[in-house]
Every structure is written in structure tokens, then in C-alpha cells.
Amino acid sequence: MAGKSKDGITEYTKALVILASHLKKTDYDKITSVMFALHNGVCFGYKPEFDPQMITDAHDLFKFHGKKKKFDNNVVKLKLVKGSKDDTAKL
Image (cartoon, one colour):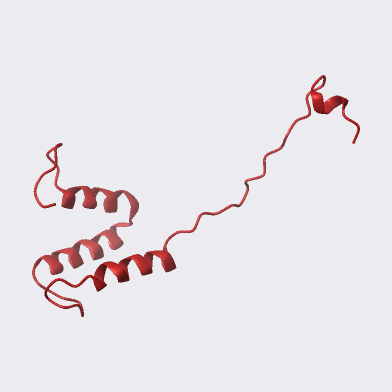
């Protein structure tokens, strides 16, 4: 998982690109500082060794706080075409 992929870009760099394209500068700075702290051994309440609870918490937080799909303004106006099968049907 570590190291460069076939295109020569690391997963870390790809993650930073995703963050940069979706976050405001202040949010991006917060995330990158946390990533830096994790890289340097800060545990943020998790075990210093392998702790899968971190991933579980991340998934749960996304389910709870992630952007929901909005279905506003999804009305499609249909047009009745003369001569079509529906034009001759009695309603």
C-alpha cells in the first residue's frame, strides 16, 4: 500500500488532491495537520499499535455526517406528442 502506484503518485498525494478539491482552505489545513500528527505518532485516543476501531469510527461518522443525496427539483415535465399511442388513449 505504501509507495508509488503505477502512475508514480502515492496514495497520500492522491488523498491530498481529493481533499484540496473538496474542502475550504481552513478545513484542508485541519485535515493535513491531523495527518501530520498521525504520521508522527499522535494517537488521538486510539491504541498506538494496530487499532481497527479508527476505521470503524471513520465509517460510522461518514454515515452520520456525510452529505446526503438531495432530491429537490427532480421534477421532469413530460410532453404529450400528438400522434403517439398515448395521444389516442382515452383518459
